[in-house]
Amino acid sequence: MRRLTNPVVLEKLANRDKKYLWHPLTQHKTSAPPLGIVKAKGALIWDEEGNSYIDGIASWYTAMYGHCNEQIVTALIKQMQQLDFVMFSGFTHKPAVELSERLMEILPDNQKKIFFNDNGSTAVEAAIKMALQYYHNQGEKRDTLIAFEDGFHGDTFGAMSASGLSSYNGPFEDFLLKVERIPVPQEENIDEVLESLEAIYKNNSCAAFVFEPLVQGAAGMKFHSAKGLDQLIKKCQKAGILCIADEIMTGFGKTGKNFASDYLENTPDIICLSKALTAGMFPLSITSCSQKVFDAFLSEDVTKGFFHAHTYSAHPLGCAAAIAGLELLNSEEILERRTYIEKEHRIFVASLKSHPKVREARSMGVILAIDLDLDTNRYGKLRDKLYQFFMDQGVNLRPLGNTIYVLPPYVITDEQLRKVYDSIRLALETF
Ligand SMILES: *Cc1c(COP(=O)(O)O)cnc(C)c1O
Image 1 (tube, rainbow, N blue to C red):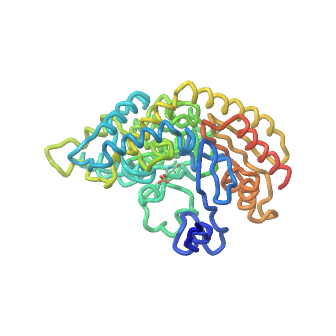
Image 2: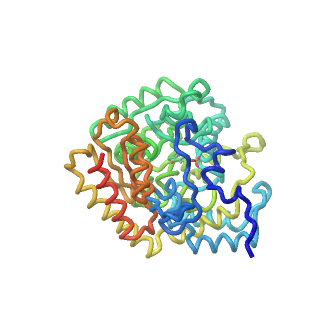
Image 3: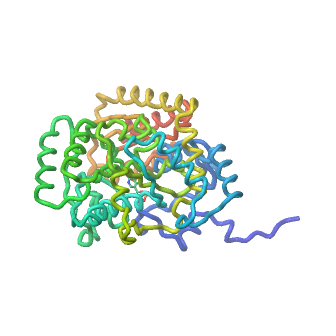
């Protein structure tokens, strides 16, 4: 018997999408319609026409253990049937307790407390509020943040203030927190950056230094010196300024170690985690801090507590996904893949060193970035063309301006990784 079908349902997702949806980071007047995605598995995603794409950036570096990872899905189902959700004020639960215990095993030693939020921006927002209140509770008003040029920390007001990418902040510039910026340290400018840092805290009342450690993601996977960052942190801490490491992009193995902070001797006071924390399965984030920070909120006076909460704080499903993810992070199977990707990235980078269209190629851990030496005026909207070019090859890469970057799920196969490199080589020949 022929079924009657609803004509609306037969229409493509992209067309139905247009009617009611407003997408993030999108100029709807000029942008191409979005692609309807119906399925994902491992390093692949499928569109509604049945075409598959290699997710070369792990869907904004979240799905590091592969999409629909069975171990994580199973953990989520189990949790969902046991305890879906309960408020995290007045109550606690096993997934949150267990996750805090597991994280303490791998976070830098000085991290002692875990505060839950539900996305990256709100993790940074909480970190900034913690820093401001840390001083407030001690009777001090410190009103200035220090941050790197071109950093990205999220889209809520505090996080946006710390961010230095003007394309995001433009209309809101007049409404932001007070922030002083320093350039990122490279081997050759460490002393100058240290001097400008000193000038800033001598002339302002600085509460915190907020930074993406070692790699600035949204700026185009820009690397800076670990030695330089170490010295900046040391100097800040000596001057009583709290250091906030935004490890939302770098966390959970991407730089080669569990956290970028593991490359540092001077550990941050506060660390923000999200994205790969839940392996792309659930929105959740964490702001961890040292005992010193936590202790500044202890008082007989109730208002000295941290009165900041999100309804979905410590969602049990997110916690369950995070615990399952942590089991995988340094498992034999994933470690083998991480080592493989790192090695292949290095070989690919070396092969591009003297390419006439490559200004710089670099890699750290599983992060690979290639700055193109192409005249953007001549190629017009080069970035959009590159994006479409890669999609036509069946590879999801989202170039940041002139920078092509790859940050694949750890489970990407040898063959899939080769296809990603091949599509980049082909792009270099074509553009
Ligand atoms: C993605 C990101 C954020 C913001 O996280 P959201 O979950 O998108 O709010 C903040 N900082 C860094 C370094 C990020 O990569």
